[in-house]
Image 1 (cartoon, rainbow, N blue to C red):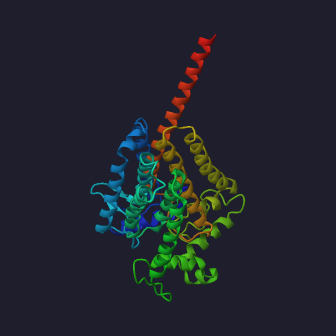
Image 2 (image 1 turned 120 degrees about the horizontal axis):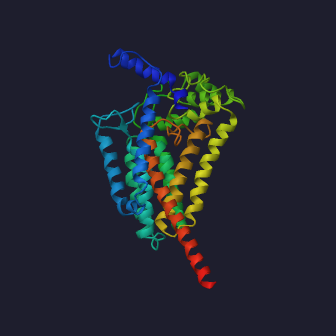
Image 3 (image 1 turned 180 degrees about the vertical axis):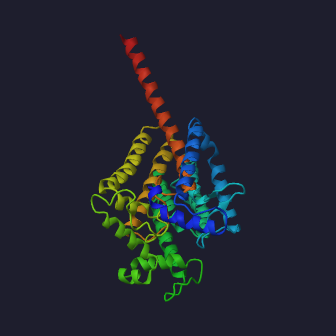
Length: 385
């Protein structure tokens, strides 16, 4: 799908490079080559690390989390930005940039799993349960909000809160958290200031307010003004123009800049436009199967860290996938998050590969446990005979 959706975007990027004499001429497969490199790197990392026991992450989860916090701070003091947002780190000599917020989704889950296991008897208390939990997610999400990247917050918050509830949090404190979150969201929305006539931003929170306003606005007005909602309107056009059988692979019309940067946020729309409706439905079923499979495995694992990690990494994948699809269907405001395993993005793919590393190790531990149980039953039966 990247080879199809990124044709026009690749030409635009390489055309700029050609004008600056970086390359000889523009071409249409810039993002495909880079995505292949991302996949190769992710597969190498996965192949190397799969043999490492998941307990390695349990022992070092706090170091991985604080390393991510350091990277988020470094992002804020660096000058690298993309479309007015600061979220990337450029390493000299490496042609790729790193987006720490993608790794935060992984490291905060394993750190909370470690914290919940260590303090499982105190999670219902205010001092030893609720307060540390708020400090953990608050320190991370505040740095993410300063970038700003509220798409990541929309993924991390529900995963962490539901994870805390499932681990044994006090419902009273969770209700308090819900009220705090609602008040904070209203304050953020109210603080965002922009000129509605020109769309010119007046502070760093303007885009949140504008996206919500455009989501709630009349669709015809949004199309006329070509505001951010214009993208979701074009996504809906792509989905419905494909019909049941699709236009055919490589036959999308919306990818020719009617739907900007389609290789990231709106790749699902082109999947529905080019391929059969059954393929879009199959994609949804695959995400649901991933979640079901790891939920089943986690229910048979006795180690609390493995249980928390397995179910909540798969829940992270599921929630992110559904938010991305809901954006394409104009059910929620535009967030700017990728479709797991499908959208273009090296940091996203690498963080997902790390998640698979832990999941496969937990699965191997579960399989080995079942094998030991079978051998024990066999020995008992032979002895009985």
